[in-house]
Amino acid sequence: MSSDAHRDEPARDMSTWTLDQLQTFIHDAHGQQLETARVAAQGHAYNSSHPLEARRQCAKLSLLANRRMLDNAEGHSARVAQQDFMLRTWVIDRLGPDDTDPDWSPEALASDTLDTLTFTPTQAAGLAEGWRDLPIEQIRELRRHKNLTAHLESLVGHLTPGPARERLVAWAATRPLLP
Image 1 (cartoon, helix red, strand yellow):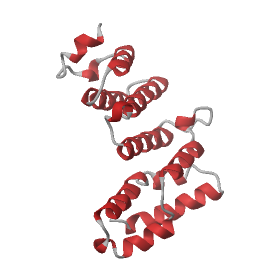
Image 2 (cartoon, one colour):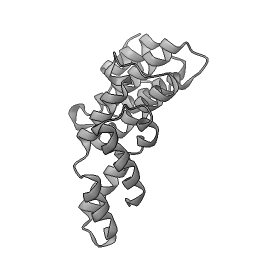
Image 3 (cartoon, one colour):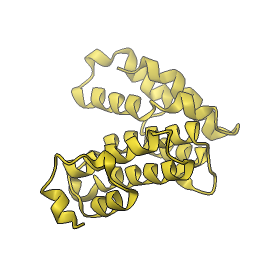
């Protein structure tokens, strides 16, 4: 099957596609096609009737489609990161962690999460106290932090004690304060 043929059929049900078909499509897709493929691959990963390894492969394809949305500035980095973090956390929770693969490693996910945050929990909490009086750009940044930390309650239980876990626990406590 040619990926060009798929481009002409945006309404085609990707939920019935094989892993190979999805992978081929994802490598050639752009824009909304990538989002559609991301959702389809994620749906396969969530399907408990599939074998565990197939579900992990589907999750990898979903991550690939999601990350490709940053190509040519087609996606917003915060949205892509949040989708990435949520799916990785789901796989760690439901299919189990795998420290040999950075996508399924709780410690790698903790590090990736911390790398995306520009405020400390203390700074974010301080700004959140009077958030209604802040310029819109700062409110957006607080919302970005709230979205990028949505997975923390599930993630921290998989982390070994240490500085990264402590920082994420602090973020989990700060998150409800954010607008």
